[in-house]
Structure formats: C-alpha cells, structure tokens
Amino acid sequence: MMHNLPGALPLEVDTALIRRLDRSGPRYTSYPTADRFVEAFDPETYQSWARRRNIGGINRKLSIYVHLPFCRNVCFYCACNKIVTKDRSKAARYLEYLAKEIAMQGALFRDDPRVVQMHWGGGTPTYYDAGQLRALHDLLAAQFDFAAEGEYSIEIDPRGVDEATVFALRAMGFNRASLGVQDFDHEVQVAVHRVQSEAQTLAVMGAARRAGFASINIDLIYGLPRQTLLTFNRTLARIIEAQPDRLAVYNYAHLPTLFKPQRRINEADLPTPDTKLKLLALAIKRLTAAGYAYIGMDHFAKPDDALAVAQRQGRLHRNFQGYSVSPDCDLVGLGVSAIGSIGPTYSQNYRKLEEYYDALDRGTLPVMRGLELTADDLLRRAVIQALMCHFELSKESISIAYLIDFDRYFAAEIEELREYEKLGLLTLDENWITVSPKGRLLIRNICMVFDKYLRRDQQLKRYSKVI
Image 1 (tube, rainbow, N blue to C red):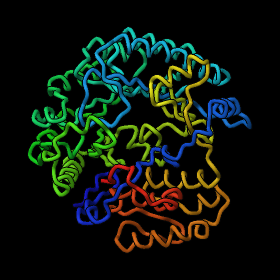
Image 2 (image 1 turned 180 degrees about the vertical axis):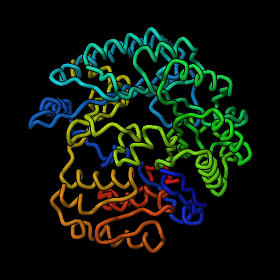
Image 3 (image 1 turned 90 degrees about the vertical axis):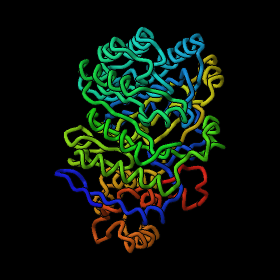
C-alpha cells in the first residue's frame, strides 16, 4: 500500500518484509545509545564540559528536560522510570531536591542561559497541582532565560487535569501538550490498568485549544492486550475526528523480566505478531488517508505542523525526546534518571531516588554516568541522524564535514547495505544513500548497520523489537 500526499514522504507497508527483518534494535534517540554510557564520566567531567561549552565562538542554545517521576496509579504496559505513590509528601520532597539541582546546574550556565526548548516528562508531571508546577517553573525561570518563541512541552494525564490547570500551564509558557491515550477501548484499558474515558481526553484537548496551545500530541500504543483490528480502528476513527496536530503510535514491547508492571499483563491476551503488524498497517493507512504526514519511526503530523514543515525543509532533528525542530542544542537533564548532552558528551543522573538525593545532600551534581564522544562516534551520529530524519544521506556532505572518504571509511557498512538494496529498502549511488518508501518503516535496521557498538557485540536482547 502506497501513500503519497502532497509534501509528505511516500510510505509503503510491506508486511512480509517487516516480518522477515524484525529484530531487536535501538530507537536512536542518541548515538551511541545510553547503555554505552560509562561511570568514569562523573560530575567533574560534566562540569568541565559545561564550563567550556561556548569556548571558540560556538554558541549553542539550551534545551531543558525535567523528569517528574510520580504517578498515582501504575499502567501495566509502562517501561518509564516512575514512582507510583499516593503519598504526596514524597512527591513534595522530590521538588525540594530538584530545586537544589536546578540551582547547581543554573550556576554552570550563567554566562549564556538562553533556552529555546523544554520538555517536562515522567511519570506524570501533572501529578503535581498547578501551584507546585508554577513554583517549579519560577525556579527555572530564575536561573535560565526562556526565549519568547521557544518550544515548551509537557506531558499531561487527562485523568487528573481540569481546565484551570491547562490554562495555568499555558500561562507558564507551555505551548505544546502531549496526552497519553494508548487506546480508547474500555476492555483494553482495563487490561492495562489505565481506564480513561474518551470524554476526559477530549475535554483536555478542548481546554488546550482554548488556552492557545500551538500543538497537541496524542500517544497511542499498538500490540496491547485485548486489542483487535476492529477496536483499534474505532480508536483511530475517534482520534482522527479529534484532530490532534501530532500522533505517536508506539509498539508495545512486552519485556516482563525487565519491567515489573508488565508481569500483570495476561500474555494470552496479547495480539499475535501477525495481528500486531496488521494493527500498525491499519494505523498508517488511517492516519495517512486522513492527511497526516509520516515523519518517521512512530510519528505522524499534520502537513502544516512544525515537524512536517521542518522535515520538508531538511531541518528536522532527533534527540532524547524524539523528533524535534530545534537545532542542535546543549541539553540540560534535570531530575532522577534524566539525560543531558553538553558539547560532544552525554550524561545521565542517578536512576534511584535515594542515590539522587544522596549526591545532592553531598553538594555534588547527581551525574551517575556518561560518555565523551570520539570523532568516530560524532561521524556515525551524523549519519544515523540524517537517515532517521530525512531518509537520505549525501555522502559528499558527510565527507566534507568530517574530512573522510565516505566509501572507504564505510566500506564494510556499504557492503551490508547492498543486501538491503537487493531487498528494495534503499538505493546506493555514487553520491547518495536513499531510503525507499518500503524501507522507511525499517529505518532502524538500516541505521544499525552504522552502529559500531552493535558490530562489536551482536547481543541485541536488551532492545525492544524494531516493529
């Protein structure tokens, strides 16, 4: 099935090919991936990179990620770093420690604190009331300088938010909202322990529109227990009717040994691999027919949305929050498990609350591990980023930017890509690597060819399936 809308990238769903090539692999929100970070990268290393980030006239603006890990109830499918509690004092204590980290991080960026992008994720940021969120925002605004035209997004749980809270978030400067839906079907919601009425979701979407949010994103998941083509089709129809600006349609990866809540899902209720593929094909068919552009991976956007425009103009980026229109920023990660990226480095905070608190009690940044990227890492990151965002790559532009002979440097990779060329996933010529319409859904497979770390160890058990 082909879909080729004006301005949208053509897409073809070849289920037989997807089934044949389906294997575990990273999502490449970064390269190298977070499991390659090392503990030798400590708070001192992070601070030294933060201090010299603008040396040599390179002026990178800032992006901020704030991790708010608390949830009132556990959703059985969840693989996020979250803390489920009804004890509000625990969550209030976290804000006190976050304030300490914000002050310490703010001091490092005093010379150039301009922020053009921020995202609050979780957990459930809206676990906190509007007053607490406002106080947190004020702490950040005291340390950083938020650009008026920036992109400021927050994840919202429609089950715990009223119109007044939505308007309060807009007043703080948030202009993009992401709502978790997963599926409107009641049977599916019961099976994953997240009962959320259609009315609740539509009410929050309506409030966000009235409050003046520039973009509303809806998250769906395919492959959930008790999901059928009929029920998911109904969900898609209702979502399309609600007209969100963006959609993310994620694959449910059932990894109960890694994620405890998933043990409460009855495996007999999960759709078969074949049905799962049909659910994905159905989502693509319905969304593209409704006029959404396929951005890549699991993302769709209206043709006039900033993501779709950026892709058409060759300005799309990919970072830890997924696809983004902001140019390459330095990312400051705040909160437990948050990931940051300053210059040619990545860093991650402690993932356990006690360790995060301990570090801040000692007066040190809660950086647990990270990585200084080598010249080879930076080169491969540029290749993977170009393929993930634009489905094509100019060998010449990479050769010039990184002072290499592309074909010689990547001789082994090009040999491997020739196998994918025979399958019709891409074309290789003297100057370009171009992903075909049927290769777009398998872009992770193509990018994995350039992953030096995977070449070293073909143990892919840690990753979710590609589709």
